[in-house]
Length: 237
Length: 82
Image (cartoon, one colour):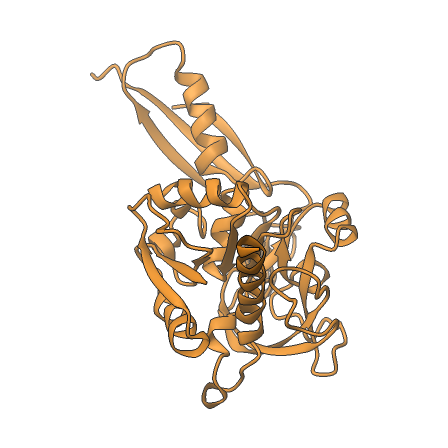
C-alpha cells in the first residue's frame, strides 16, 4: 500500500500521519505538497489536521482551491480512497466531496481531549478491522467540529449508513455529555455515498501507540490496508 | 477617480442554523443589563473592487460569493453596490 499525505501551508498533523503509516503500519508513504499535481500513485490520500491557509475565511475554504486538491477530487471521483482528518474533514466538506459543514463548536472553545467513538458500520473500507458498535478511544483537537446538515439530508445520510463514527460515552451510549462540539446526531465521522471518502474530526493518527494513550486509531489504517491487500490479490489472479 | 466597480458582500448564516457566536454575544448583552435585546446573529462583510465595468461583473461577483465567500450549505449572502 502506498499513502500520500498532503501538506498545505498550515498543516500540522502531516508528520503524525506520515509517522503512523511509515513506522507503525510499516507501509510506504510520501508527502504531497499543496502546489503539486502528482499523487505519486498513492492508494490512499490523507488530508491531515492543522490550520490550512490559517483557516482564513472558513476552515478549509481556501485549501480546497490548491492545485493538489483538483487531483484529489479527480482521484476520489474515480474511486480512490481519501481520508480527511480534522482540518482535512473541513476541506472535504468545503470542496463538496463530503456533504454538510463543520461549524464552530457550540461552546465556542477549542476542545483537545480523548473521546469515545462508536463504530456504526464495520463493512466499509475504513472500518472493516473493527467490530460493529466497537468503542474506540481517539483524541480530538478542534474548535470547529460541529457537524451540521439539513434535517432531511441528515436522515438520508443515516439511512444510507454513511455515518460511520458517533461520539458516545465509555459504554458506547450516545449522550449529550459525550458530544464534544454540538454535532448533529453526535456525528464524528461520515463517508460519501460510494464509501471511498472518509471525513472524521477525531485523530486516528494520534492513537497508534499505547505510549501515547491508545492504539485504537490504527484500526482505521489497518482497514484501508486490508482493502489494498485484497485489491492487489484480485489484480494478480 | 478610478472606474473600478466596488461592491460590498454581506455573508450570514441561513435562518435556522445555530449561530453560537451570536448566542454568546446575546448572553453577554443580557448580563450587561440590555435585557430588551431579543437576539443577535453574527456575520461578516467583504469589500470587493473589480476592474472595469463590463456587463458580466455581476455574474462574476455572484460566482465568487457562491464558490468562495459563502458556504451555501450554511450561509447566504447579499451583494450591495458600494
